[in-house]
Image (cartoon, rainbow, N blue to C red):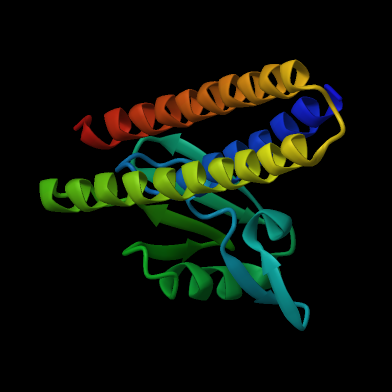
Amino acid sequence: MDEIIITAKSEMTKAIDVIRVDLSTIRTGRAIPSLIEHLLVEAYGSKMKLVELASITAPDPQTLIVTPFDPGNAIAILKAIEESGMGFTPGINENIVRVVIPPLSQERREEFVKLVHTKLEGGKVMVRQVRHKYMDTIKDADNDEDTKKRLEKELQETTDKIIAELDLLGKKKVEELLTV
C-alpha cells in the first residue's frame, strides 16, 4: 500500500520539474541559455527547438552567442529570436547569432515577479490534484482505518514537502529578478 505514496511523490516531483523548466524561461536581466533554448525554429521543413539546432553560450551577463550546427540555419534562428516576443534584438556575424539581453526596468521586473507567483500557483494546483487523486485511492482501498489514516498523513506530509520545494524555487527566482 505504500506504493501509493511512492507513486504520488513521483507524480508530484514531475510537477516540480515542469515548474522548474517554466521558471527558467522567465528572463532575469542576465543572459542564460535557457531563455531561448526552447524557442521553435523553422528548419528542415519542420519546427525544431533551438537547442537541437545550435549551441548556446553566455560569454558575459548581457550576451548570448548562438552557434548553429549547420550555418544554413543562422537566418532561421535569427528570425525565431526576433519573433519570440522577448524583446531581444539579435544580429548575425559570420553565421554566429549574437543576442544582447537588455536590462530589465523595475516595472518589468515586478511583472515577472507576478508571473513567477502565477506559475508557482499553477504548480501547487497540480500537486494538490495529485494529492486529491491519491486521497480518493486511499479511501477506496480495502484497509483498516489505522492504515488509511497513516497513509493519508504520509501523503499530506509528502504534499507539504513538495509545496515547500516549489516555494523555495519561487523565492530563488524572485531574488534573481529583483537583483539589479
